[in-house]
Length: 313
Image (cartoon, rainbow, N blue to C red; front, side, top):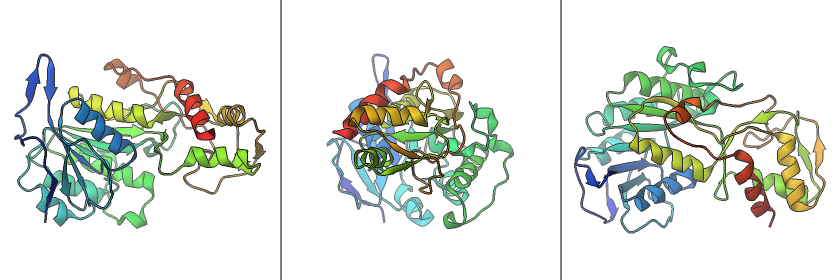
């Protein structure tokens, strides 16, 4: 059963949007907003004055502004979702926890008539040829849908399936945001910190090809992009990454500069699937669509160098 854990501002029905001057304040649901970019998004939307509810299992002890409400549900359970959201209406729903066709089908069915807009947090992993890939390099509208268990599908395939269902079948305006690797001081994978610690401890760093270039985005900018989507009418897939890809050897150079150590780089494949240095070929995405619609991305090198320095302290 759904349970309201924390009281906040009075609830409003979808479409009952407050306006102050030129600003619109909306009723927002964030599915999975208890860590990383989800948590940042909740704080950002609340700071902007939106009426925010976090939908999660309620197991994480997370501090939010007093205005943020919490709704207990299990995103992986269709019955739990349907029960928790049965009497709710939202101006926009952000889904951080949609990893398969079944997850997406549940959202399509349960949120029909309950939201004015839906944002799926997808991944640049949907691209099979990620070389300056633009959104049309993967077309979910023609991608075959297969209902399979999460455990039987790769992360990339799960996101392809989720996009195919949402962008083809949803009866509400939908967006799929394709993020590359996301880094930040709140990154639960610690993929940057691990490499900094290896260099500091004179441990080998595995990089198959140091000249490989990758797109990145900071957790702060990822949350800002998601929040920006609440105020624009555009739909479909969106790439989102900071300006300028960086090579793996450039990242190593930043770590060496910050630590005062010389990295022991081994030219061999990295077996850790979460590794920052695990890309064997260049993986970059094109953000022309987002920029045409008015979003300005930061330069990758600016925030990345600062993040590396912070990780090294």
